[in-house]
Figure 1 (spheres, rainbow, N blue to C red):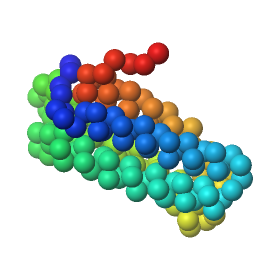
Figure 2: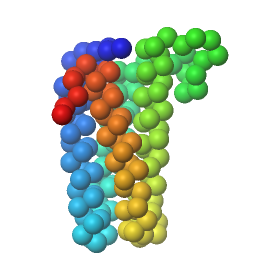
Figure 3: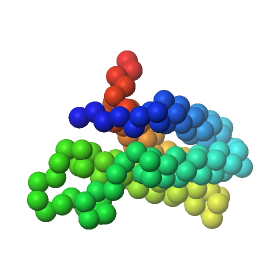
Figure 4: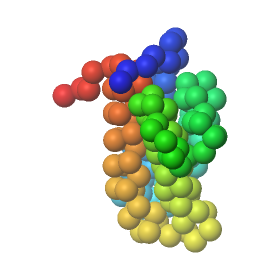
Length: 142
């Protein structure tokens, strides 16, 4: 199913690339062993991620029936299921990003933060690919 977020599609996809860049800066800093730069990078990523997902949830993804992220008891229309699942993915991605941020801010634990990075990268990449394909209607890149 493809639904169009209208004029937002290009801007939201561009924000995905900007978030990719911010996350890449975190990865580079963390693998270089620069805890201070890693912390600044993940702070920027986390803040931008939260703004971006809030915008999508307010402007593009209608609230699911019952305003919950759990599936309805009866058969759920495909569009509602898609938007509910994408909102749930947002929650999961924000949680992992927040965990990385807390590890650096509260504990200064760069190794633990770096260990969570692949989890966040997989979730973020799968989510943006799905969103751009199923919501924005853009073909997957090779």
